[in-house]
Amino acid sequence: MKATGSVVGGALLIAGTCVGAGMLGLPVMTAAAGFYPTMAAFLLVWLFMTCSALAYLEVSLRFPGEVNLISMAAKTLGRGGKIIAWITYVLFLYSLMAAYTAGGTTMLANILDLDIQGDFESRVMPLLFAAPFAGLVYLGTGCVDLVNRLLMIGLIVAFIGMCYLALHTSPTHIFKPMGDSKYLLAAFPLLVTAFGYHLLIPTLKTYLNEDIKKLRYTIIVGSLLPLVVYAVWELIVLNLIPTWGAGGLVEMLNSGINPADTMAQSLEAHGPTVTLFVVWFAFFALTTSFIGVGLGIFDFFADGMHFKHTKGDRVILSIITFVPPVFYTLIYPQGFLLALNYAGVFAAILLVIYPVAMAWHARYVKNIPGSYQMFGGKLVLVLTLIFGLLVVMADIYQQQGLLPIPHN
Image (cartoon, rainbow, N blue to C red; front, side):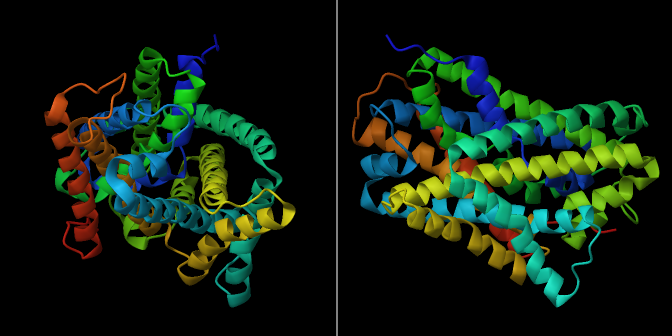
C-alpha cells in the first residue's frame, strides 16, 4: 500500500502558499479599522475560505487520480464553466505576478539605493528584477525548489528577529486602538487572496493518498497557521507605525506605493536593526510568492497549451509567464495594491464561488458519487456563495469609489 504524507507536511505547504507578498498590504488596508475589528474580519474570511476549501476537496475526491480546477469545472459545470475557469485562472495568476513585479521592482531599487524616476531606470528595473526568476523557472522545479528553500529560511529568520525586536519596542500600544470597522469592506478582496491555497488541494490529495481524515485536518491546521502569522504581523506593524498622520499607514494606503518601501521609511525611527529585519522579511515574502506563482503559471500554460518540455518551448513559456507582468509594471509602476485587489476578485471567483458551484452541481444536479461531503449541506454552500459574491461586489464598488476609504 502506498505510504501517505504527513499532516504537518501538508499544513506547511498550505501555510507557505498563503504567507507571501499579499500580507505586506494587510496592515495598510486594515489599519483605519482598528486591530480588533480586523481580527474579526480575519476570522470571518478564514471561516468561509476553509468552507470553500473543504467544498473544493469534496469535488476533488469525487474524481479519481490527479485532477485540477479546469478538469473539475468541465466535469461539473460543462464547457462554459471550463472556459470561464480557464480565463479567470490566468487573470488571477497574472494579477498576482503583476503585483509582485511592481512591488519587487521598487524594493530592489531601494536595496540597491537607485532612483527609478528616470525613463531608462524605470524601464530597466522591472526587467532586472524579473529576469533571474524567469531563468530559475526555465531551469525547472528542482532549481526553483532549492532557491525557494533558501528564501524560506531567510523569511523565517527575518520574521523571528522582527517579532523579537518589534514586540520589545512598545508592547502595550496596540491594545488601545482607535478605528472604524466600515473601512474593512475595501480590504476583503485582499484578505481572500491572503487565504488562497485551494489550488494546492489536488496536490495534497495525491500527497496524502486521498486519506480524508488527514486531508481535513491538513486544511484546517494549515489555514490556521497563516491566520496566526497575519495576526502577529498586524500586531507588529500597528505597534510600530502610526495609523494616522505623516508617514502613517493611512497615508501609505492613499499613496498606492508598495507598502514595504514606505514601512521601511517609517520604521527608521525605531532603529536600523528593526528596519533591516522588516525590509528583509518583506523581500523574502515577496520573492517566495513570486517564484511560486511564476512556476504555477508556467506549468499551467505548459499543460493547458500542450507544450513539450523542449528548450524552445520552455523559453516561450518563460516569456509568456514573465513578460506581461513586466509590461504592467512599466505602464503602472505603483500598482502593487491595485493588482492585489484585482487578484482578490479573481480569487473570490476561483476559490470561493467555483468550489461551491462545482460541489452543488456534483451533489444535486449530476449526482456524482464521492467518498466525502462537506458538513452543513445546502446552507453552508449558500452562505459561502453569498460571501464570495459580496467580495466581488465589494471590489467592484471600491474600484468605482463607492466604498469608504480613510484619509488623513
